[in-house]
Image (cartoon, rainbow, N blue to C red; front, side, top):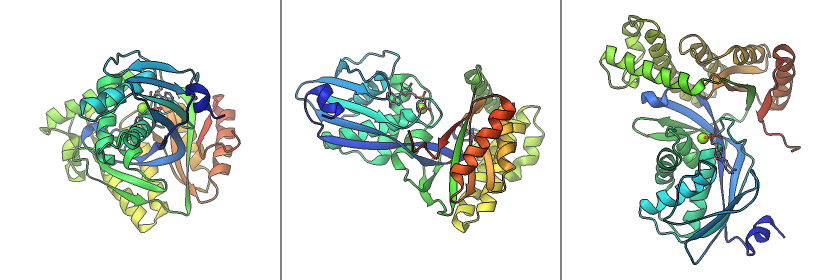
Length: 366
Ligand code: ADP
Ligand code: MG
């Protein structure tokens, strides 16, 4: 008997999935109104679901304790745990005018939780897709992403940007999603078939990362008011001399955002040209800018990046995600991703004493 039947005593009528994501380039640009270029990772979240005739919701997550928990539609209340994502989805959809009854749902996921691969947006999007199918909701992928952000901002209380729900909803495996975080204009670009992506977690998380993140946001706002612009995205590389005249460290912060936005556009061109060396070089420049100008890297991440760059199969490597720890993403020669990642992990662990985790390519043995 499968888990759903065992838990709920009936069969699921709907199954839906959503993948996690990694950002290829465009870091700390979203809240500055700029550009990002994420892609989906192979790991995904699956929802099995069956509608009920009452307004009760029962839900369990195999990724967590697997025990069902319940709430009643219309009586959602924040509990500060994973059920808030499910309550938030139900509340947000109903507030937006979509008609739901209760449901039984089972969550299964291979997306590592809380590792910066957007397990939360994968959950929001997979659940909304399951509900859309079960209740025949008239909801397109773009609207679904907007609602996903509201779930996290308004119900869960997580101030996430628009990138995660957009790529989890609009993304496609093997393609990158270009997204303009201001206009929300977006399009898909195919990733080159002759390259592999690798994501390695450093095993280090900075204790004050939330405070440092807020400090960077405040510095960007400071730079905007001195430069007389609403968002740093309004500036281009032609404005770099004005940016250089700002006081330290606002000059560096703004320079990162301006050059990073330009790099996202150049990365899209490199993808179109199939120029892996150019794309790798942009990854490297992005990392150096995060390290020297935005100052969101740490020694262990720089070590990982340097070790990766020492491998001739690696086109480029950079910190991905908010920084102060976390993961790096590498662009490597096609067919070599698994071996590059294993060697990188071994030399990193030997030199840093920290335990690294290979997130992509996923461990097929587990
Ligand atoms: P991430 O970078 O992985 O999105 P977040 O802190 O934004 O990290 O979201 C992680 C939270 O999302 C978890 O603590 C949990 O509450 C919820 N979540 C994600 N995936 C699952 C899952 N498979 N089952 C239950 N809850 C999940
Ligand atoms: Mg998240």
